[in-house]
Image (cartoon, rainbow over all chains, first blue to last red; front, side):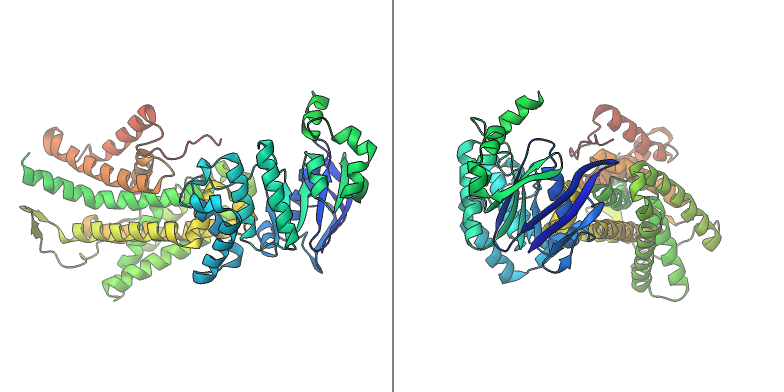
Length: 247
Length: 295
């Protein structure tokens, strides 16, 4: 339902993405793996409208969204959980969630029902509903970021490095929840440096190298692909490898 | 100084202080949404007062003149944002701040052409007979000014704390891009901030005119004192702005009573002395506020 065609984009005069093709079907999880600087986050930014594209098209269903504003794209149901979570730290957990549902403009009972839905998924957020978001632990913050996005009733969720800065156990918990959400039919475009984990969750995966898709296959096939294993699965996942590579 | 005199000074301080508080609040709303210091803020106060004078002279009863003046200046604030601030979004905050300085001169000149040089009065909201309270006599206008200011501050608090739109405005001041990713239109939040900021400053202008008249040139001093109040309270903190404003008004009034000669000649200097002291000793202001390190 989300379809990217021939996406070229960049910063200033530097082209970062050189003609990306990518689709995310209904209820599908598509993972983009790649080293630091391959253009993964840049790709997500073009979808959510933070970064304008130089050429190509991005369609949601039959609607072209690549010329629309960030807030309009969000209202249409393409909801990004940005890198580093970007919570409203001084606001309470509940206020963050309410703002997540801003585009829906719910009120009264409906707003309450949606909040309850998210609290059922993340009981810990209910306990901390009156607490400032900035005081939560990293894992709780990521849960809040996901919960906030769910408030918008997304058609497609864009996730940028959901494992960043989290302990392995928490990461597992987060990915379990993402899997559950997908079971309920939510489509996702997932960018993640922990390639093994991300691909095991994904229906399909793309391997991005210097702004070009060099490989596309099912998640399972990519997991078993020796080239992918060699480059992106270190002993501890892809992240540390890419760090040492660049160092 | 007797207790009764002290009360008297405090009362007169609260009158002016309320106006500084509303002006400081106006600065704060725009600053939080955009990082712009709006040097035309005082002009909104002046335009509010003088618009009310004209409407009242044209035969409008006081409450209607009040509402009409606030509405007029709100429209001015909206046009100001649309025509002068928005087109410069890409040029950066500093350029926008310089534009507000230019706009303040333009507003003042415009007011000079419309209303002339003379300071213009407005009748008190409910007669001139003073009220006796706690052994001191209070001007009725003092009670109006202070009371209405409280109403405005509480109403604004409710708006920003309880409504989804208000929360969206706060979200934008924390992280505009994250707010946009939730579907919040940042440009509308900025427009709303200019509108509300203009409205409350105009209300302050209408309220102070019966007590101290209003001329085309009155805005700049009120604006600078409002700015000093915002700094005193902690730039970016709405509650700090209100407290800073009231405190500044009271200190100013007491300085008239305490300084030798009992003249009000030093009065206007006090605000700036405080401004300088705060910037030296406690740049984040009384209530903390945001750390200003964005430059």
